[in-house]
Length: 377
Image (cartoon, rainbow, N blue to C red; front, side, top):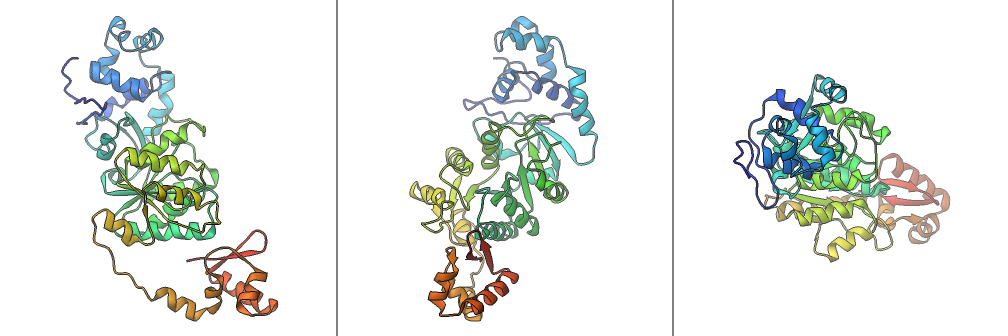
């Protein structure tokens, strides 16, 4: 293997980045758009031949030692200008950026994982990609309590200096981003589509807010639609950017468990918030705890594990809330029906309905399908 001025290659296929001139983006994009040139293939080409420009200048016979004859032929044909045009136009828009393994500000945390993406499309404050970060992930079908928990943890961790990383999915991901945007360290959204596509569509406003106050990131070329196989690949970047991964709610088949597994394999801390033994969205978290994830009840548990000073905890807060609203004590934290509440509280149906409505308007209780209610917070 020849000496390479831009890269240091080790047994984990990690590439240590140095400066890359902005005008070289064209060659990087062109290579990444060739069918069959995924991350591993591109890293092998870079390690063997150097820069993308040097790869394009390499004789086809030498290329065929590394890649198939079809891929070698496509490289020898040179960049496809028609394919390149949309990405080059996108890069001219304010806030849009391409970050390659050769950039000095490539996320250093990703250089520690076995398969760092050679190319990242980014929109927003790219400086956030190199600040201390923590992933928060969970169920797309979150409970009201889960959404509130994710938002509150994200806001508190953001105020503690951790940029919150998640996948902009419905449920816990979206709540985590919203909470982080309220804190001082903001948020990173790693998406499984091209950055010219917002998925899910109902998060269009959230995506706009993240691009203004945080950063959107994708390894997938522009125009890449939502495809199931892309989201597990996206998850390794979520965990890779982070010092730890907190799972708030998760079914046993949840993609969040994939993110947690990847985090553990990458040497990151794994945290999980326990829930009701009757709730299907708690079973994934309980499984993680059985497997060694740290059980989390407050931000203190996370900061302590990461070696940070924990903020003061006001232990009397819950008791004060229950004293102000005695019905909350009768509710507990599991979803509960009207008949059970009548039995516990001794209230009439009319009085109970009025109190529940007031608590719901105050944001302390959420109504669930089947005539059940759940305490929030």
